[in-house]
Image (cartoon, rainbow, N blue to C red; front, top):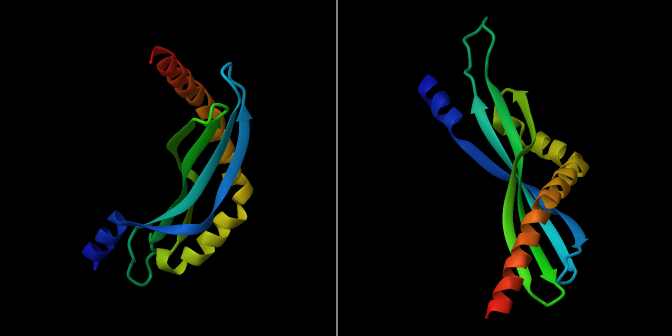
Length: 148
């Protein structure tokens, strides 16, 4: 039984939290404005940890979980060029519950859904962090078009 629990503890199962979150922004660039849309898909990873103890002893069985956000940026430059990039924000929200993961999946999904504003905040942070990379991508594309 311990080997089964140990094997279960090493496997993490992913389940969709449902839906996606979005953020749109406009970035000014010397070569023209860029309209950027960021879409994040939330995934919940569950990991079974601990062991079941015999009667009279405290169990260490628990479910450690985290909500990750897979983000795609689609940015359209005034010239019509499209700049796409994939990013991730791992562990945007994390938690732990006592017992089996299988008994907590629905409650964890509800908790994550209830924290949608917090997830959107993470998406906005990633978008802000990406602005410099987007500007570099536009600069590079502009230089390539002038050279060619």
